[in-house]
Image (cartoon, rainbow, N blue to C red; front, side):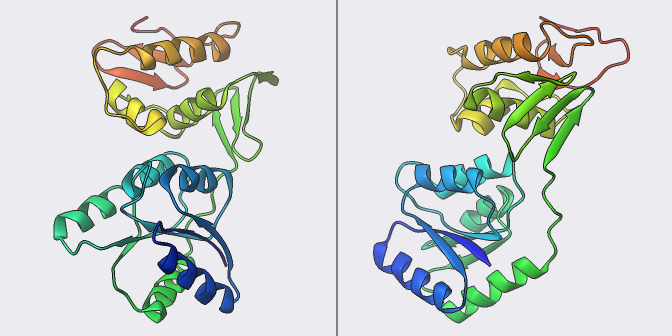
Length: 230
């Protein structure tokens, strides 16, 4: 079992590392949200143990970023025993929850239960019309031709593709791609969409990335391919 442990309290992190490796697990450690997000998105883990309170990005932000592109099982750890905190974690996509202090044997049992649930195998490709997104190689192709994308553009495209046919608001896109609260005074989403559209739609037909005025954006193959916005 390959496990990512995200915990900023070094004694707890070391305790979990030793305990899990003694059980035959392959364990990676992260002590802050930024490192955790990078590892969780770049490496395929069987399960992730994620502390809710972290420096940099908190656990909920890491979880939201992960859920935009992956279905890796996650058990959250928290020092808070409030119902609302657990609701937030589960609502953000956590599969299980443990309140500190906890028994290592209980954590191990829950991890084993999560990996036995048979989570659906993560798709390695996403397709929208003749647009193909290779999630493992982090590459995109249109009509067989490679599209040159930045890391952030690839994340944006993946988010849109995972929600193909679904209108995503600027707020949702900002939270999923940049992990930020949307500020109506910034045009970061519009600029990113414009650049992405030029790359995936510019020289190709039919057009796939559509603007829905007053609502947001949608990636889908349409019969008439007519955009309703700009």
